[in-house]
Image (cartoon, rainbow, N blue to C red; front, side):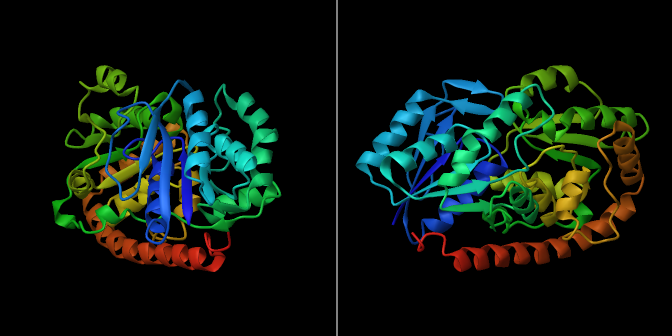
Length: 370
């Protein structure tokens, strides 16, 4: 069977949505022919994969949404020449998924929609457009879909309120990181943030974290904040914070061994996101024993996986994040103890997610039903 993936970006570009798409495409390519059409702001020939990946240069980027007429035309060309049996789109990032709907209708090809977040609203000026999109084009997307996949039970419940039934296929720990481990004795006085550093990802709360860390850095001069991630605002952040005490911007890290080394040295992982698809960095941090300090959004998502005695997360308010970080930074011995607990817990979490993913894929027979 031939399966065409249409995605807004694809690794090494993008974030959690794109990493999920890569994992899913890799799983399906074992038994089926898989092909990926995606957009890019970088090198069109970037990356090596066990299936064809074609990148179309982005024409315009609205918020975090890439747009390109060439992408639409190329999707139609592939549908005509390659004749896919199934189209898989990843959303709620608009356009790429909407192209999938159009091609699905024009060529009568079944459509699978993978939904990654709790909607499009981010508390930004683009929310008005997001509401309009959700009330119009997104409804057509769901009506056309033969199958809707949610990446978490929380997303499933969100879609149920919209009258959309879905099955849950959760993300899981990256396979290229599983072979790496760390010793809790190697942990340093390092706070880690992993995420895209660009305007469209401001919801991840990097500004909040930087302000909170700098407020505490005078009291904890031995601690450092490492920021892993690339994006259009990276140079601006380096100019604004690069000379601040203890702050390091490491840029985008794609090499698994290099990323594993960074995780191995971090004692705390902070992700104060107000909007998130899943929070894969939390799974990765747990694998390497980094104690998570999360927003309430992510705490609810991971509360069933984390040991109950670990410190509660801060809310989004700055004062509470400062308080949580202060408590963690002042307790290095407690962090090492929690590192051991997290490493053991992460193994159970990975097994649980792998089992859920396998059962769901087999249970719904994602491809065979078409």
